[in-house]
Length: 355
Image 1 (spheres, rainbow, N blue to C red):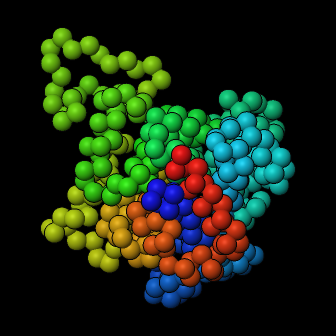
Image 2: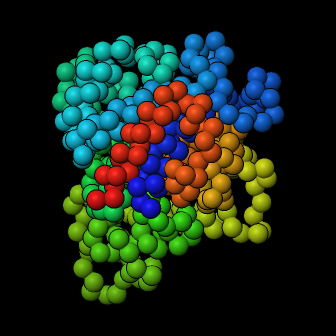
């Protein structure tokens, strides 16, 4: 049922976020193994001298807390009201920040949020002027709630996600990739699987005008004919290539001639850094390979080191949407701080998605 898959996507993201908290940003895998052993199988407590030091196993990072802020806003109003979400940022988050990285709720403030804080609080800019140049995944991650809420309305997904991303991201390419990820997620919440065919379904939505990506090819990628008009570009992303990435990554996941073993080494293949163009292919790969195995997907995501928190969060949402809330092992919810309350919020969002 769509409500179970929507709730699964949200809880999958939150679980992935918390799984990455303790073992976050280890780029030296030998150091990671010295601190946490050869295989991380659950929530871990950060070392005092590392990122998120002072926090405890099962807690959310600031990215997870912002996702919950958006989740509460939508559940309370029944829909996305951007003014309410930005009010919450102004009143509940920004007073706790000082513009530096190692500060604020969750123990660390990412670049895109620091830039929005400076523009909003220090420079007194409007929310139409707060997007910065970070190439990271924070906006894609919090927008998971929007993809789940509006999964039955692909055009609404694209509109709300891109608008929400612009609050903290100023690079149109990053917004396009963030929007594309959430369009993929919405199809999974709707009942699709992350197979190579997913991009065909997305391109059909482009061709009928429901997704705002520019393309001149036909739905089967046939070349345009002489005299065909140039499709309208106003308000549209430059190309649909971000919608094609999951097709090729899913092909790699099922190709018997391609071996990434163990699967956590996908972080080495696609890269450990924070940028969205490293993160999305790894998340798509794990979600295609372990489409019905939530535990394997998120644990391979965190054991890959680097920006494993984002990798696990993005992967957790994709697989949570495919297996549904019922397919997530109970221990991940029970050991998550405020797990029962978060599950109740996710279920309420799922009920909204069913409408």
